[in-house]
Image (tube, rainbow, N blue to C red; front, side):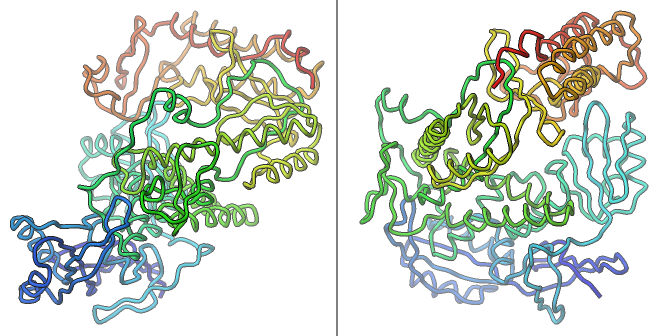
Amino acid sequence: MTEWILDAYISSNRVLLRVYREEDGSLVDQRVDLDFYGYIAGGEVERVAEELRGVDGVEDAWVEEWRSPPFYDSKVRVVVFKTRSYSALRRVQRESELRGLRVLNTFPHPLVEALHRAGVKPLTRVKYLGARRIVVEEWDPSSRDPVLEYAVLGFSEGYFTVETPSETQRFWSVRETAEYVASRKLHIGFADPYVYAKLVETEPRVATSAYKWVTGGAFSPHEYFEWSRLSYTPLSLMSNVTIGRILTTIEALHARRLRMLIDKSKSRRESWRSLRELVEFDRGGVVYQPKPGLYWCVCQVDFKSLYPSIIVEYNVSGETVNKPTCSNTLTPDWTLHGICLDEEGVVPASIRELIELKDLYDELYKKTGVRVYSERKSAVKWILVASFGYLGYRNSLFGSVSAHEVVTSTSREVMRRARLAVEREGFRVVHAIVDSVFIAGVKSTSECLVLKERVEEATGFRAKVEAHYVWLYIPRSLSSRGVANKYYGLLSDNTWKVKGVLAVHRDTPPLVKRAQLEALAILFKAKTPGELAERVLEARSVIDKYVELLEARRVDPRDLVVSRSSRVRGEYKKPPLYAQLSSAPYRLIYVQGKLTPLHENTPVNYDVDKYIDLLEKARRELPDVSDVFKNTY
């Protein structure tokens, strides 16, 4: 029988594994004996350890030397104790704090560390189970995930969505959605927390329709499973977890192996800098403000995981940047900061294998086309994205502003070298954004591949040909300038790519999305300047058709909905009226120029002029005939 560890949780002070038996779909709870570890510093540590050995529930206690933050260049003697009773662990920690001792290594959750020490990785197959002992199979990234009944609840374009292994359903009615979910027998459910709350409020049976609901967002099961495996975080602890928390858990487990303490009372102070230094070094990555218009024969070269690769290549971590005691310091010309190379930092050591894993999933997906590999790749990609963002986050355990600046300044140098390499080949960079370079005048994918190789040689970082455009259009903003993350174009393989325009915004009304996508589909049929010139007027006239429908009020109000699935940002301010009149997820419509909640089966007098304004905005993102022949490289 094929058995999987679906979950792990603490009950009556002990660890229980919820084992999923795939053949019959049953769930069985199995008690296992795992050790919880506690860490205490301060006082006479030998005496503290001796006292703990006599405490009921504590199996053993001893003294170890651990390295102390912020730079881990000093050591402190720490009492380490272990117990199989979760309540005993918490009791000792509380009493230690009352005695003025310091309780350390409180992150991640003790259950995560217990699973990690025992080598029990969630969402893997069971090899041996019995007598309170478990052995799991070594995880192979090419393996499949368990086949089980699940549901993913989301909210899009005003509709509640429910994805199951066999189908994806959309419901306008909250009641119908709740009844559909409640009628199913699920092993596990994944949901946007606001959608879940609304459904449970409508139909309480939704809460018991699955063994476990994970309310961290409407991600796929395979993404959650991958995060759970990589961080040893069971599904019981995954609700409302952030990608940053998953990353920090991976880093913390690595730090444990090296006896590097997690002490939240110690932080890294940033050195004082002049305004000139701030302006020069605290600038972020490279983002061009491109010249708007139409470009022919454009090659887009993207670096592979550029920021994580910089972190690994230059050993960037909170404790390695500007380390005061270092025998081997690297100070690149493009940054103020020195990087210690005495040993590998926590952050690069934690993400090195993730970069390789992302590449592996990419290869597996290209070879097989199996969706699970694409979704696992997405899960790893989000952790890698967070690896850079969390470097400068004030609550990051293993980051610092200086480390963040090293990465951004290095990325700017990499992009400068890439531009110079392209120019040496006789081409021109017309746009660049963070880790992407757009090169005009590249007539074939083979030329694209040559340029990619030149960029790799000049920078030392891996790249890929992301796209080769027959034509690329960069729309004008209201100020007649281009916008960095807004562009679309026809690719040489007859597919197309659309970024940043209204059609891909989550909160754009469906009617406006449909109008713009219909117009773009007409443009994407053109492969030459002559063909495109003919198509431009036809595409722009599509907007007129939808304006006429609005003026005649022959539009279903559901096609005018503005969807917002989460709470209003900036909660320290008075929320807008729609947030006071309803609860997330918000289904909104413009009435008299203002967003107003749209309730089921309630007539509404929508604001025609506002929606016409949105259609005109969609029209402005289309090219003019005059654009077609301006840039013909």
